[in-house]
Image 1 (cartoon, rainbow, N blue to C red):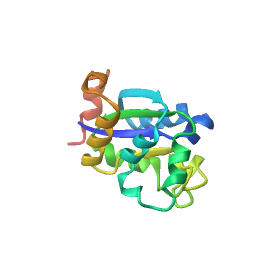
Image 2: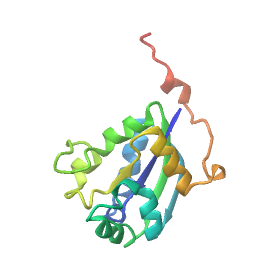
Image 3: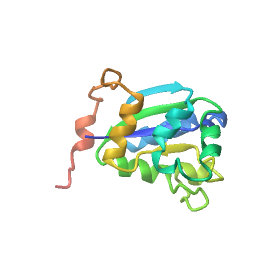
Image 4: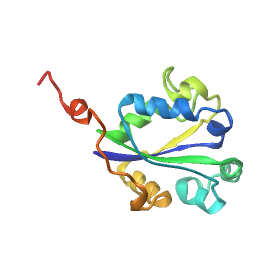
Length: 153
């Protein structure tokens, strides 16, 4: 089972989208394995977005990400990374499809509610940044075997 990292950004917290975002991920059949709320620090933002730290907008991004708490989560499931990215929608909410988190509730790239891992390597790095192994729960959900079965085969 693949694991991925999802972060609800400060605008998702302030706009009270927490429950709706979690509901979409659970509704897809993904399993929540870890979750906590915290205040990011500027060094944590730099570690989360190393590919953006040299961009001219990075100081604004950092100010935004440390302005309010965030929720960090680990989700698992079959092809969890691609499933989650489809649920989140395009980074630019104006290009995100209706029915995605960003397409339904976000208005701007700079305030697009959520962050999600884009690859297995990124997911590992991001999960390790915020969670110890002891904080990630391993458990079987009721009906999990039913979800894995493909009755048409």
